[in-house]
Each structure stands twice: as C-alpha cells, then as structure tokens.
Length: 152
Image (cartoon, rainbow, N blue to C red):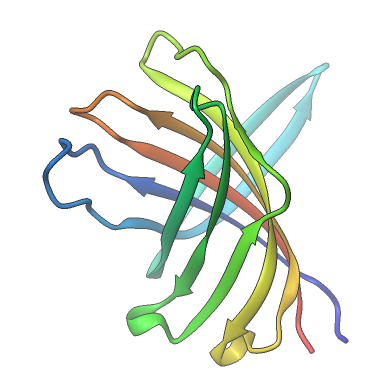
C-alpha cells in the first residue's frame, strides 16, 4: 500500500424549489491555504481549472431531523472516469437551529466502501462538514470533504 492520498473538495448544490428537479452537487479542484496568524486563522480556498467531481447522496433521517445515515458516491471527472463509494460511520449530526442565513450546520464521517477506475480497491475515510438550507424554496447545500484514501 502506498502513501495515503489526502484531498479536499467543496461541493455545492444550488438552491432549487421542492417539486422541481434537483440540480447536481458538484465541486471543482481546490487549493487550500490555512495560516495561523497571531493566535487566529486565515483561510483561503481557490478553485482550480479542469474537471469537477460530482457528489451523489442518499440518506435516512430520524424523526426530529437531527441524526441521519447517509451513503453515496463521488465521481471524479467527466463521465465518472473514477469514483469512490461510501457509507456513514454511525450517525451524522445536523444541528437543530439554523443560523441567521437559514443554513443548518452538520457533520458526518464516511467509510470508503470501494472505488472504480484509478481508485479501484480504495479504502479510507471521508469527513464531511456541511451547511444545508432546509427552506423548501432553497435546499442549498455546501459540503466540504476531507478524504484520506489508501490505494492498493
């Protein structure tokens, strides 16, 4: 097994009204810069050119919409030349109260259950830290993934 492959992607699903077609949740390549500055943080995420990754999710949620199980895949590049499949490790958490902008904060960890193409045989863990607007006329999602993947 080689060195782990670490990646960061920020996926976005634009707002859409319930009852209309859900737009794809996509994310471009990124460079991430985090700097510790005099006891604080400065961060910058810059999009890179090239192909995008597409996130596909299915979930089951508890009665008060604060805990959930999730599974899905990430396809990398045009026509999904490579992909990772995953399922949640335990339950994910969605905070009960929305921020002033209407977004609720949540997190979930995924176990990589397989891969295709250049990622065939992959294993590892992906952590998701997301913002979700549950307003029926929004449904917007911003989902940042940090993956540490092992390839055979």
